[in-house]
Image 1 (cartoon, helix red, strand yellow):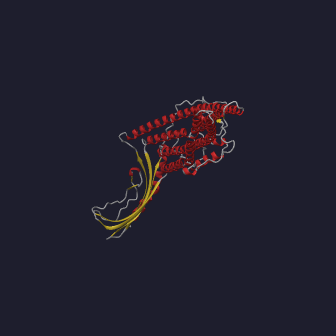
Image 2 (cartoon, one colour):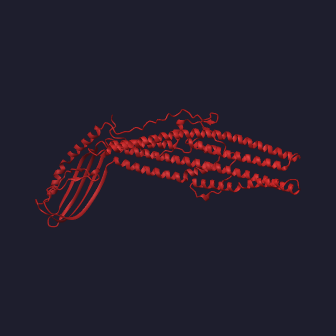
Image 3 (tube, helix red, strand yellow):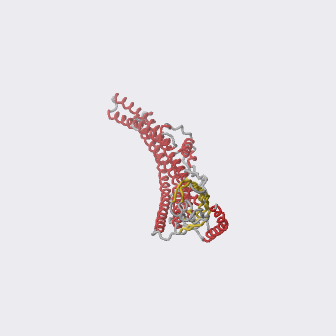
Length: 524
């Protein structure tokens, strides 16, 4: 019973202790003048006001960059891209990484709140030697480094001095809570670092969407181009077969030599040799489109009929360099890395400052010695703690130096990404203009070749020329048409590359990201 009375008497001072420690905590928070903040290093690149390679005559500011493929009026392509944005494996991997980053953000935020633990136990023991006059004093569970905090409520059991503890049973349970007061912003810096990683994970998702849309469109344009080339080859084979038949007839009638027959057969074999490679190339494009849509390669064996008027050249956007840097996921992601590393530097610097802790605890139990009457025991406690690094052999400052060097490195990577983005846009604009000119010239060449072939055929009909010359003119015209088709494919793929370089192909969506809590003691 004495132990119980002792506990009651000592607990009378508990409210005063609470008031004292509460006042101390308020004083600690009010004494901090600032938190450890590290600003993002300024970008050393002088961003130009406009791109030199943009042609004002063809560029239009109203072009939709986010969903540029809708300008083509091709529902087949739009359906493929939308399916890919939903089901592509890379996009789903990026979504999984966002979930992972959010989980880490929750872990970092948990440091803002107290840690509460419950413990219980029972045992049977014997202790020989002198029995301590006071049982009590403890360490708050869960404190960093197990910092000891003296707890009030020590119990004096009813045993004589220098007696031996008899064999007996004990059971006890307790509740402890600890809280690190984020005076200098270390926990805030950790949460900010992970917060920036979440935003970086979103940029990875945007980059995956951009790549999927561009890759599907590229493969689709190439597949449509191969289909067009296969139709040209079919016409070339038909013309070559007519040439062989005509040459053989003239040879059999003695009007020509065997060399003319061999030359006609050469044209035929050359046209026939292109069929299987084009079929294989088309199948390869279709398999790739299927995989980009998250399907098996065998699920897409042919393209639906293309609607009339589809695949018209999209209007090129007149985008400023600053707009490109604000849209490209790789640039945005590189910036997030810099901001995350800056927060990490702040967390490392905060290790130089003291850490303050508040702890609360309560425990109760009962001892059952075998030979004497059992007794209850218990404690209630509240305390504050301080941890300040005095000597670490340079570990903390070395860690700060390492993180500052990493910040310098990621800042340079950000600068490199910006320069590369500006270079990409200039190069693709230049290439697009070059291929536009090439398509125009080759299309004119093919038209002139077909006109020449028609005139040759008219001369043959009038008896002024041989059919062989007319057929060879047709074969040459089809060859020119095939070259123009290949150039058109290259132009379409460079159009895709242009929108990709401009950061088109993804639409920003609001993400449920929990805001970083306001840092403590922001008073200047």
